[in-house]
Structures are given as C-alpha cells and as structure tokens.
Image (spheres, rainbow, N blue to C red):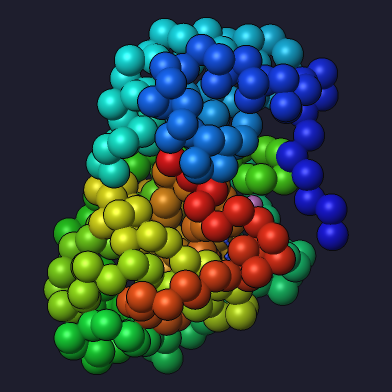
Length: 257
Ligand SMILES: Nc1nc2c(c(=O)[nH]1)N[C@H]1C(S)=C(S)[C@@H](COP(=O)(O)O)O[C@H]1N2
Ligand SMILES: [Mo]
C-alpha cells in the first residue's frame, strides 16, 4: 500500500530543505517537530505544489512571510488560509480506503453521535440537535498525502463549541473519532479547539453528500486530509494515545501545523 505524495519535477527532500533554509531557526525547529513535509509546507503557505514552477512560488511565499511563520507556528490559533468562492475546486475529489460505491449509507433518523471518555454529559446527539447549533462556513484547502489538494466549502458548528456544550475535559490530550466505515483518527486537544476545526454538516451550501461524509465529518484545515474523518459516529475524549486508521499504519500522527 505505497501511498506516496509525488509531484512531477519536484524533489520533495530538496524543496523541504530549501524551505527550511528560508525559515528563522525558531520556525525551522517548530516545522521539523511537526511533519516537516511538503504537505505541511502547503498547509503553511496555502500554496498548491503541482510542478516546479509552483514549488518556486511556495518557496517565495515562505521567504515572504517568514516573520509570520515564526509567530504562527507557535500559536495554536494560527489560521489556515481561506479562499474565495471562485477558487473552489469542482468537482471536488473523493477519497477513502474503498471506492465511492462503498461509502456508507446512513439513515438520518437512526444516526446519532455517541460520546465517550472524559465528557460530563455523555448523552448521544441527534442530527437535529447538531443542526441547531450556530453554523460557520470556511473555504479552505484540503491536502491529501497521496498527492492532490482541492479547495472546498464546508459549513457547520465549531467543534470547540460542541466540546464546551457536552462538558468535555479540554485539559485532556486527545479527541478520537470513530466512523461508520470503521475509519478512525485523532486530534491533539489544541487542534480540536482550533477556531477552524468544524463539525461539518454541509458542503458547498448543501447537506453534506454521502461520499463526502454524510451526515457528519470533522473538517480540520490545519491538518492533512486523512485527519479529517468522514461519517463520524463517535467522539471520545481521552488522555491515552488513540492513534487512528492510517496513523496505526505508519502515517505521522501530527501531520499538520
Ligand atoms: N470515514 C473516513 N474518513 C476519511 C477517509 C476514509 O477512508 N474514511 N479518508 C481520508 C482521506 S485520506 C482523505 S484525503 C479525505 C477525503 O475526503 P473527500 O472524499 O471529502 O475528498 O477523507 C479522509 N477521511
Ligand atoms: Mo488523504
């Protein structure tokens, strides 16, 4: 299952080396403590690397906002870049560890979000209850470790707001998500509380389509695509490292900024 992120005409090791050379020592250390990958550089700059030319542009943008990079890498509230409506990628790519046809079919009436771990009120939530929370919309870039990225528009309540409502222990280390298709992933608490981390119920202005995670996904624009779980049906707050589907097969757990 070799899933390598390969861009024609771009040597990843050299690009990362070049980029880190343009960072201040502090931001370089922070960057390398994370994934230190091309995907992370794309998250950081908002640039899409598809060839040598765009790699050059990315390097230019690392140099340009170097001072900011330093400040933001240490700030758990740093924001992923947002885009305009006309930059949205259509059609938006589908990805999962199975083909489209096998995406789970969820009956909205039967569905509930189960809660576990360090949470004061563990009563499950219905879709109706989630839909009643305040929605926010983001147009952000999703970066898949397999070598593609796409800009999409996602809407729903902030995960931080939900965690507050259920009395989650926000001093705990991790939030773990289980999905209908037996996928799973986990986030560090700082990322779970990040203002752009979203309980996503709508995509491109409509109910979240089945293939993109109906009825609920978690959108995390500061992390690589595989840390954005679709078809979520359980949320657990824990201090025990929970790993995840790809994380358990060797993907870097942090995979983000
Ligand atoms: N439940 C579930 N979530 C998942 C996956 C999956 O296989 N199952 N794949 C991940 C990966 S690797 C990517 S790139 C994105 C793809 O999301 P999209 O279909 O909305 O593009 O979903 C992520 N979340
Ligand atoms: Mo991915």
